[in-house]
Image (cartoon, rainbow over all chains, first blue to last red; front, top):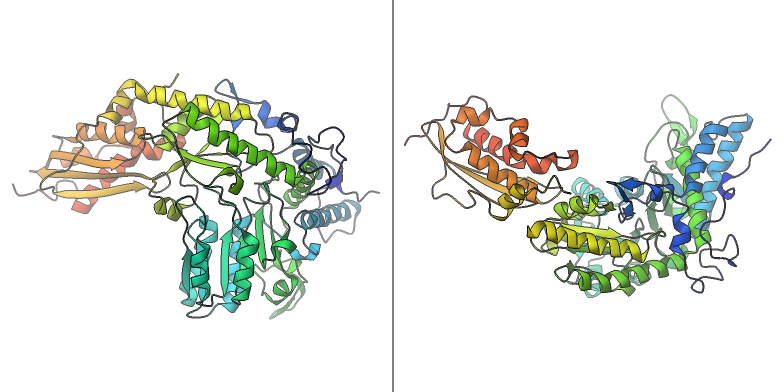
Length: 441
Length: 134
């Protein structure tokens, strides 16, 4: 009988020779042996496909990441070998499924340095996590006239749930503005904090500009003013080291599908005292301890928030993805992407002098490069790039207020991951020259 | 290599026909694709049940702007009934290029905007019901 944890049964990813297997997030080799994207690439089967006869150049990891074989195989293995519901079966494969599901929770907790696995709630994605907090903590604690502070750079997922809550409770939203370079105006934060907001909610890394926000600094100031803090880590967890204890926020949310894990996986971390006090989100099976016809008692945290059969395969895959990233070492991932951004910011304007680039410098930015070619809509840019096998995002990237603030109808966006190489950026540069050629007629 | 960006499409994009505003439009309607930021305002001057004048302004991708240029050429001089009867396929035929599902909204924004302009006139459902006094 085996109740093994598939989360540890995959070969080590592109770890350079000599690096110990299973190096921790910021392991001893971090920063010394650079990440080798050419080696990492071999772990991603989709990179062996072609589009319009060209090898795929995938520059849209900020929308969703590609998946390494280890993740795909873990999902496959669950369905082939031990598909069973969790927390129910008194039989071998049911126990194995439960063990793998809970092992994945422990892995994810370790990956973001949560104090305990019990503080990790599995959700479908960061959007669901934010909605969960707004609908439970928010509904219980926000009252008429209360203030919630957000920022101008939020993804709609960290904006619209608070709009709904504010409308329902007659509460007010205030916004930290940004500079033209896409940095948060912390001087204005101080002014807003004098209004005694109940919550400050902001993104760790901007999905559009790539800005890495000074989380700990904002958290400290918000806590001094008596506010709780929710951090949207969807674009941070896959790209920079994240330690929820060091960041000291109250809620930290992220998506699995952006961090090399399956779609339908994601996590909410919150302090256990908060989770204990929050009412349930969805109701049904799994989240209860005892049900009578007219009332029920809730299950313990975190299962209180996981009504119904969860996406078991996705959660197991997420655990494997977290292990994969941990073995690469998040310090190395961050350094790799910082170098790519610096290379892109230097190379693109040289190869394509017409290009307009937005966002802060490489030191303050994750692997995201938004741009425009004058007079050419980003959809046309993206379409012509696609004919060359290059995938970028075009549009407003779910940040319409940010685009309005920057007076842009839309932008093109190239975003990077552990397998992105300088050649990918060179391909983008020559692809953009082709766009200009087509439009020059 | 690019079937989508044929010369005549790009020509309509660079120098769109009927680009501008009318002095006294019978109806003016703005349409937008919020997902991509395409935006078009179409103005119609209708006399005796016919589209006598038409103009548009806007910004967006080559497909949406070329489509507006071609469609406004097409509807000038047509009766309101004829314009109301235009279908998505008619517009795709005018464009003469293969439109991927992701770009369909761009291609059809101008037709949607014209349809809404007619609906605003009360002429969408029963064309001819709103003859303009000349």
